[in-house]
Length: 244
Image: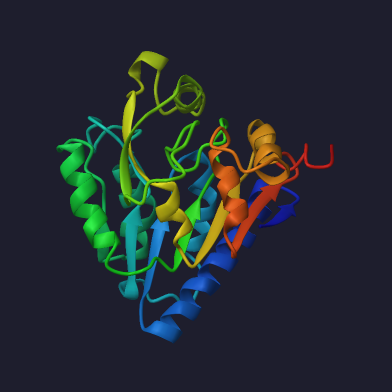
């Protein structure tokens, strides 16, 4: 695991987008197409804005999979991750092949159907973040490090749900769904490479635990230490506790 620290969130987003774009372009040259996993949330907005403007990517050759989604949340809700991806990545980039997690349908069916498509071929690049509670996707602590299922129905812990309120996606804790569909830890780790984008001081404690601590289901993203090709992009604020 290779942390890279940039001066501020804008430089972080630029560096991560350049890296991600290079990986997509190289994969298309080598294989004729690329499969990616896209994360959402406030921490990914600037990164995705830069990524869709990186030159030389034929987005018609990119197939995108969805990392996680709330159960029961309408697609037109401001916090819907389907809405987020359609507005910030799929439509502006012109991605034609994408697989969204419909949290308004039966979640077990969604896990099976999208999971079957995902399992057909290995993901080339996964874009992820780290939650304030150390979560990876919506795998809150204690995370399941054993399952080989591609998608899981998960319970969201209170700290995760409070983060969503703090970021402005919901008006109150009561408004945040308690369950979600999440890509599993092992499915994320199966990607050929991982680009992890983590700005902001409020993520500093989680970053320290992920980078400096032991691999532990109570710090789900610590499992990234076991991946052979993962780069974590930090700004000075999110990296501020690494020197302790």
